Image (cartoon, rainbow, N blue to C red; front, side, top):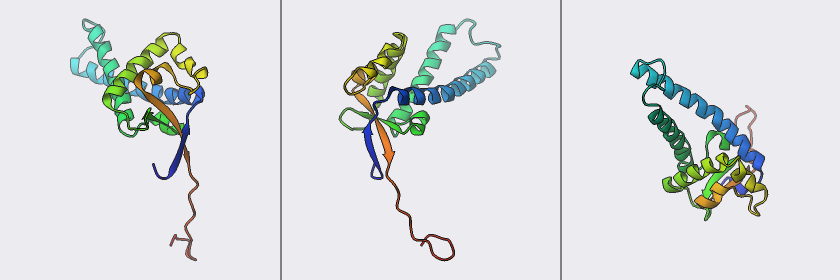
Length: 158
């Protein structure tokens, strides 16, 4: 990125803030997917006979959301709002395989009572378990001040 300077995203609060934003968006996506499924199947609830398949489908949808965002620009909506970006440890763009490893490891980080996330408070590079396992890192994006273009007497940029 030529117009911004990236620095290390070490604050756990940035991660959690972005995750909260993404959770709201993801809930809406999962709600819509469930509604669509119920409409197609003409059922009141998808939990009847294929509950396990339904849950796997929702988990896959979550992975597709995060995976697509991470592989196409390195940012989810929450990450854009909190000005952080996901990159490979070597500074490269993250691929689908790395995204899958990161997603699974993040689930494990959260299921261990959040210890995988809290690890960032003690790690010298402020990385969570899923960062370490997947070979990724979050960086903070700070916008450089833009220079103002000269304005002519009519108020329009030249």
